[in-house]
Image 1: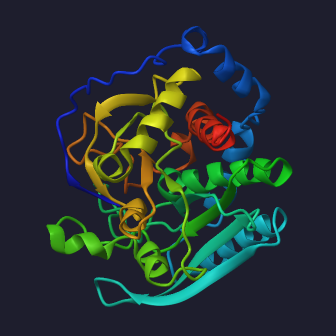
Image 2: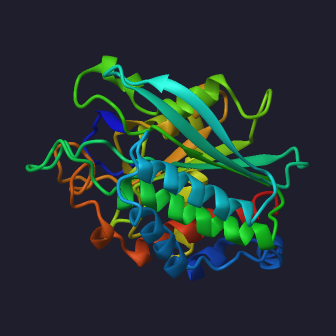
Length: 331
C-alpha cells in the first residue's frame, strides 16, 4: 500500500451520543437496544491465538510471490481454512509487475454460510514486500512483514475460527489477497496501480459471477505496538457510514486509545479497488503523525518482525471487528 496524500492530523468534530466508555454507552441506549444487544453473544477474541498465527507465517520467512516461502505459506493458510469451512478455494492468476516481473498470484478465499444473501467481506493481504526500501541498510533484501502482511491475516484467522463455531446473522467471506506489496516506490499517480495486484485481479475476475457484499473491512498493519487507527480518506469517501460504525464500536468497547476520530491520509490499498467494484469498504490501517510517510516507522523496514507485534493491538482490532459483524442485523 502507499499514501497518495497525507493530511495534517487534525481532530474531526464527530457528533454521536455513544462516544465514551462502555458504561457511557449503556447510559444512552434505549431499553430495547440494550435488550437486543444482550441477546447477541459476541465471541471473545483471543489475541494469543492471533499472535501464534502471525508467528507461523513469519516462520516461513518473507512471503514474496514466486518464492518457496510464499508457496509454503499458501499451503499452510489453505489447510487452516479448510479445517473451518468446506468452501475454500485458491484463485490462481498471473500478473506482471511494474518492473516487468511475471508473478503467479494466489488469492485465498474462504466462505461461511454461502447460502446467505446478506454478506460481509473481510480481507487482508498475505504477501510481503520484496524489498525493505524504507530501511537505511539492506534495502534490496525482503523483510519479514510481521505487521505488514502477517497481522491482518492472523486476526482474520482467529475471527474465522469463531465464525466456524458460531455463525453471525450475515454470511462472511474472507479473502487473503496476494501481490499487494510489489509496488513502485515513490513516484506520482503512475505508481498507484503497481500495488494491490491480487485485489485488482479479483475485481476483474470475481470468484463468483456477480459477487457482491453489503460491505467490506480491510485489515492492514493491525498488530504493531501502540498503533493508532485514523479515518483513512478513501474509506471516508466510499463508506463513511461503515467507518463511523467501526470507530464508534471500538470506542464503546474501550479502545479509544487505538481508534482515533482524526483525519488520516489517503491510502492506495486493496480496499480502494474493492470500493471501485461497488462494495463499500473501510481500511483499518495504522498511521503515524510523526513519520514523513505517514506509516509506522517499521513499515517497509527490517524492523517489521515479531518484536513489533503487540497482543493488545491485536485484541483491540479483532474484538472490534467481531462486535461489528456479530451485531450486524441485530437491531
